[in-house]
Structure formats: C-alpha cells, structure tokens
Amino acid sequence: MENKISALQPMEVWCHFDKLCAIPRPSGHLEKVTRYVADFGRALGLETHVDMVGNVLIRKPATPGMEHRRPVVLQAHLDMVPQKNNATVHDFETDPIRPYIDGEWVKARGTTLGADNGIGLSAILAVLESETLAHGPIEALFTNDEETGMTGANGLKSDFLKGEILLNTDSEQEYEIYVGCAGGINMLASFRYRDEAVDTDDDVAYTVTMSGLKGGHSGIDINLGRANANKLLFRFLKEAVQCYDARLSSVCGGNMRNAIPREASALLTIPADTEDDFMALVAEYAATFYDEYGAIEPELSFTAAKSPMPVTWIPEPVQDDIINAIEACHNGVLRMVPGAPDMVETSSNMAIVNSSEGAVDVTFLVRSSSESMKAALVSSIESIFLLAGAKVETSGGYPGWQSDLNSPFLQVAKEIHQRELGVEPQIMIIHAGLECGIIGEKYPEMEMISFGPTLRHPHSPDEKVEIASVAHFWKYLTALLANIPAK
Image (cartoon, rainbow, N blue to C red; front, top):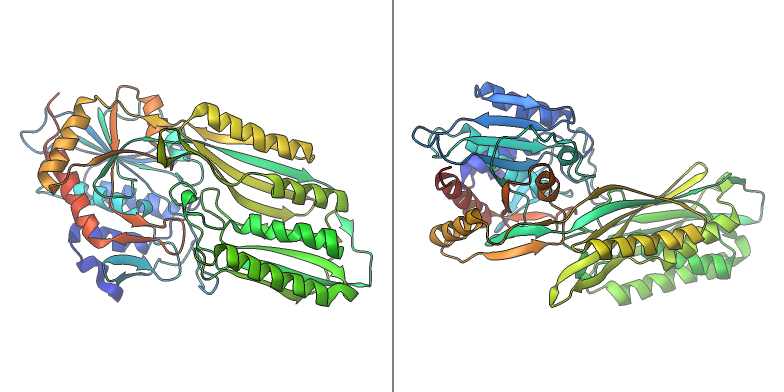
C-alpha cells in the first residue's frame, strides 16, 4: 500500500485513518462517510442511530466490571476542509486523499490531509472495535458538517445523548487540554444589481490572479500574519480602477468560511492604450506584495493574463462600492486577550468574494472569546457594507465555551495526563471554534474537555499531523477511558 501509513503505531488508529482517506468526505458531501461509520457500528453489533441532520451515534456497553462508571461521549466531526494546490488535479467528492510519510509527519499530496478531525474520528472507531480496552459505557458521537457551520451540533436533540462526560477530539496540540473556545458567527454582505453590457471596442480584457498563498485555519493560523488573497486582490483593483479606467466583470476568491483564502482572481477590462502601463502596475504590485509578505508567503504569485472580452460589467457605481467596502473592511486579528498577549481574542476572516449573474457576495467568519467584542466587530463590518449599499445578514452563530476549571473530572484528566505521559498538561482556551459550546448548551450538566494530537496548518494543503503525537494521544485517550470515575 502506498506510503504504508497503516503500519505506523498505534496501528489500530492509523489503519482506520488510512481507510478514511479513501472515503471522500468534504463538508456538504458526507453521504459516503456517514454510511461507512453507521455500517461500521452495525457490523460490530452495536446500537447505532443516524439522526435527522446526519449525526451518527454508536453506543458500546461497558467492559465487564465497569458498568457503574460515569458514561462517556467520545466526539469527532465527520467532514474535512477541501483545499488543494493549483497544480493538483483532485475532485474532493470522488477522489481519495493520498497520505504519505514525510519524516516525523504524515502529509497529503497537494491537498488537505483531513487529520482535522480524521485522527480523532479514527481513534474513536478503534475504541469501538477493541475487545481489550477497559472502559465504562461509551457513546460515540460523529457530527455532521462541523467545518461549514457546525450543522450537526446545532441540530443535535437534547435527548439524543445519555453521557455525563464529553471527550472532544478536535484539538490540535499534544500536551494541552482545552477547556474553552471562541464563539463565532457567519456574515454575508450581498450586492444585487443589473449587469451592464460591455459597449466598447477599445478595451482589452485581463484575468488578474493572486495565488500561491499558504492559507490555513482562520482560527488557529489567523495570528501568523499570512496574506488574505481577497484583500490583496482588491487593494490592486482599487488603483487599477482609479488610475487605469479598469472595469470589473467578475471576481472569485476563497471557498471556505473558516479557511484563510489562498487564491483570488478577477476578470476586468482596460482601455487598450493603457495596456503597457497596466502590466507595469501588475509587476509593481507583485513586487510590493512580495516585499511585504515574502518571508511568510514565499510562493506568492500575482499575475495578469490576457483573456477573451466579457459580455457584461458590474455597473460602475456598484463596482466602486464593492471595492471600497472590501478595502475598508477589517480582516485578521482585531485584538488579543487583555492580560494574555499571546492569545487571540477577536478576529475576522474575509473568506469568500464571489460574483455571479447580477450579484456579488462577500462572506466573513467573525470569532471572539468576548461576546461584546464579537458583536462590536460584526457591527463594524455591517456598517461598512450597509454604507456601500449591500444587504448584510448573519447566520450560524455559535457560542464560546468555557468549562468549569474546578470540574472534578478536569482534575482527574490532569492527573492521568501527568501519570501516563509524564508531562503536566497546559490548560488552554483556543481561538478556533469547537462544538463543545453548542453541545454544552443542550447538555448543561455535561463535563467536557478537548484534546488531540499535534496538527499543523489544517484547512490548507500544508496540513500535517505529527506521528509521535498520535501515539501519545491514543495512550492518553485509552487511559482516560480506563480511569473514568464511578457514578
């Protein structure tokens, strides 16, 4: 088998991950993986349910003598973020992920790996399959479409689970136990207009493209100073319109609300007699962008290529409003946690800018561990786009999560971590979103922690998981299950 990741230790986890990589599971297209997981539970003779929103629940009885331990929910999400490099030919709805071993890491060839949250998912399948692990009553909860709006967690019924402790496996740094996360909300600014027919024979058309950026997770990587393809493209477009009479026909940038956009392109026209000056402007911006970001984005590329003339333009006043609003709008980290300068409190990700017939939509994901600061940033972005004439809507809001730091189970989890791994765990709050906040609203008495192996750069083709950390994660997970307190 290519790469032989199934031979890595612990084999019971890596074998399941190898099988998952063969099953397409991008957000929004989970039919195959949902069926696979449900069939897996039923084949083991375990009680298995699929709810109305596509969550899968598998119940496994306690091993003999552990029936009176507190019941535990093991939780992971089914979907992965579909991102690929320009040169990679890959259809996430049909093609398998191709993992390979690169020294101490497992990576994928030109695409996201899906270790977020595929390693946690695989570990839970291994627990369900095991005939030797000691544990109390277990419920394995596999949630639907976490990456595109936490659909499964939001649709979870308050009587679906019976567990008293939830172990979320969606964190991405070993030796850390997460007890809180930022809340988030989606924003959509929509411009609607009547397309204007191109009515000149004196213009030429160009497609301007920003590419080669690293992108990444808009929660975990937002503080790394990486470039946002949409912001850079529109920075150029403003000068092209102001100084070279450019007219915008269409634009396409980014594709996931929680991924920093890596690529963006625009089709525009310019007067033919400005063509040389326009190309000089492209070269000037390419050099400027590299000066600003080259140390962080060494593969950054900003180019223009001649294209067939479009049939329509975005009306000039609307075009100007869109460009000015995007230029003015905040993107990235807004504020760090007061008193904790290494921890992001509030941020936004201008994730998607996309035009279609008579419409341009701009999608943001706003995150904050402060509800008031989240509301303030939403209001700021809303105000800019309302002034520009857009309709602004919010959706998919989810709460932050703050566990009880005096929770009895948290103290047990810390002691077991120290004993099994020889390291005192750091107790952390993550800027990324976790489903714990939503589940906790539905099950307020449930004690929760989140932990996982070490991942780097999820939501980008640079995603990788550290091999040794998976073994530590598995050792800790199984030790926790063996030491869950009695009721």
